[in-house]
Image (cartoon, rainbow, N blue to C red):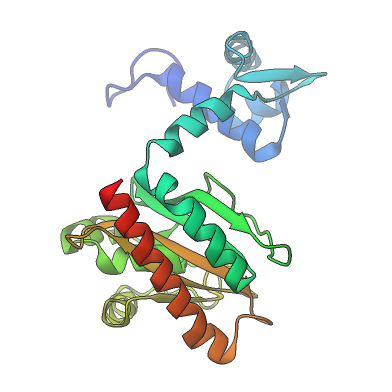
Length: 256
């Protein structure tokens, strides 16, 4: 990969390298120059120069022989999510929903063909998994994502699903025809289930957030362990609460 100047696509290689370094540090909590250089296939001097620049801008901080992400990213992240009307419209309603269900709830929007969590709230007994605010997910593997796919327009859905469907567990729907059939069912009933399709041992119920003209804005879900998300509670009562919360959020987002 080009690390300096423009590459064949007209993008700047040095900028790509800086963000590859940032993402490497994120994935490893903290990283040293040699580790970054080896993993990314760049020279130590290149890695050092990028890290020095990022440190001068306060985007990374040095901790001994390693570098960690700086808190300056919090400001950027907060600006990124608060630009969404759904973030402001969802907070109170999602807090009430999670209190009623007693698990964990999340609000998702779609960006560049993937789902991004812009809000998450957890009850005292709710389980924290690998997801958090800012986590990106494959839409076909989650109840929020399938809710979004089911209600977005056909052209956009085809763009998102063009290509191989990632298989995360034995229950992930990775066949296009089977997924389309599932999405048709979701459109008919108004909500989606995630039965251990992203994480084994976890289930979720999701629903689309629609504007008053039926435009898809995003989706919400509540998730919990299979030991608690089961029976009539999981199949009937939780979907009723989730779809009602989604309707309220849609109204708030439309008229805010």
